[in-house]
Each structure stands twice: as structure tokens, then as C-alpha cells.
Amino acid sequence: MRVRRARLDEAGILLGMESEEIGTFSPKQLSSFLTSGAVALVAEEEGDLKGFVLALLKGREDARVYILTVRQDTRRRGVGMLLMGALEEELRRLGIRRCHLEVRASNTAARQLYSKLWYEEVGLLRNYYGGEDGMKMAKGL
Ligand SMILES: CC(C)(COP(=O)(O)OP(=O)(O)OC[C@H]1O[C@@H](n2cnc3c(N)ncnc32)[C@H](O)[C@@H]1OP(=O)(O)O)[C@@H](O)C(=O)NCCC(=O)NCCS
Image 1 (spheres, rainbow, N blue to C red):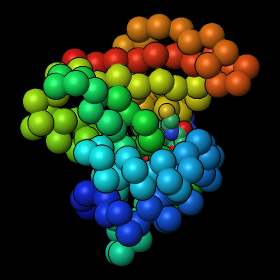
Image 2 (cartoon, rainbow, N blue to C red; image 1 turned 45 degrees about the horizontal axis):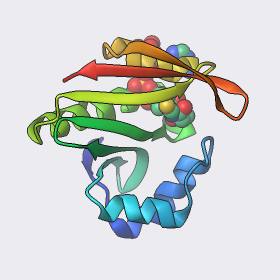
Image 3 (cartoon, rainbow, N blue to C red; image 1 turned 90 degrees about the vertical axis):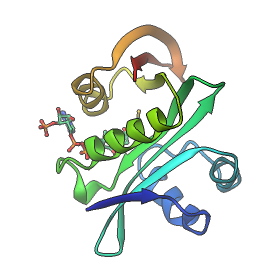
């Protein structure tokens, strides 16, 4: 498994992967993220894309993770951790000092993953996901 930057011509595949379960972004939004300075990384194995993470920079020192997704048939193999680790390394290299994200309160898998990476729950977002609560999490890099 290797991690590398996502390419703009992969937006369609990434969107398919992302919408398997989340489905929050349109093709136009994703393409505009990929061309507007977002840090977008993919995990690739034998030519197949297995996972995707995307963060936007907010000012000089903050970033926000917008997408983290791993293909269903590849889960629980450490790809999520690998992508987040590579993302954090890249953000640090860019001078980013704090990383933020939001997650559904019911998303045990993601919450556990972020806790393992020492993200802290810093706020409750009531009804953030159309009736479901979200958690705000953050970590100093
Ligand atoms: C959340 C997600 C990215 C995790 O990816 P993954 O590659 O399966 O995660 P990893 O294998 O790196 O797991 C790392 C740790 O996270 C936790 N975790 C992952 N999946 C879990 C699950 N289904 N249940 C409980 N804990 C889980 C575990 O602590 C795990 O460590 P362990 O396997 O040693 O116990 C993946 O489930 C996914 O794509 N979900 C749908 C999209 C999503 O919810 N994204 C997050 C939006 S904020």
C-alpha cells in the first residue's frame, strides 16, 4: 500500500468511493477542492485506489479534514490510520499546527480511529447531520 497525492483526473473514482457511505459532495465541489490547494491523498494498492483523505487549509495554521474514506472491502487493515498519518505529516510540513474535523456521533469506527490518533472531542454539534448530532474533534500537530 502506498500513499500519494490525489490527481484531478481521479475525482470521479474518489467521488464514487466517498459516496459509498457519505455522499456529501458534488463532482463540482470535489474538483474545486482538488484545484484549490486542498491536501488530498489516496492509498493505492496494485493500481487500485483503496482510500482517500482530503483536508482544507484554514488560514496559515489550521486545517480541517473534510473527507476520510476507505473502500469497504479494505477496511480494518490500517488504511485509515495510514492516510491520517500521511495527512498529518504533510500538514506539519506546510506549517499547519492544528487539525480539526467533524464526525457523526454514531460513527464509532471513525471516532475510535481519531481517538487513537489523539484527537480530542472539543464540542457537540446538535443536529449537525440532518437531525443527528455531530462531534467536533481537534488535535495539535
Ligand atoms: C472510518 C474509516 C475511514 C476507518 O478506516 P479503516 O481503514 O477501516 O481503519 P483502520 O483499519 O485504520 O482502523 C484504525 C482503528 O480505528 C478503529 N476502527 C476502525 N474501524 C472500526 C470499526 N468498524 N469498529 C470499531 N472501531 C473501528 C479501531 O480502533 C482501529 O484499530 P484496530 O483495527 O487496531 O482495532 C472507514 O470505516 C470508513 O471509510 N468509513 C466510512 C466513511 C467514514 O465514516 N469516514 C469518516 C467520516 S468523519
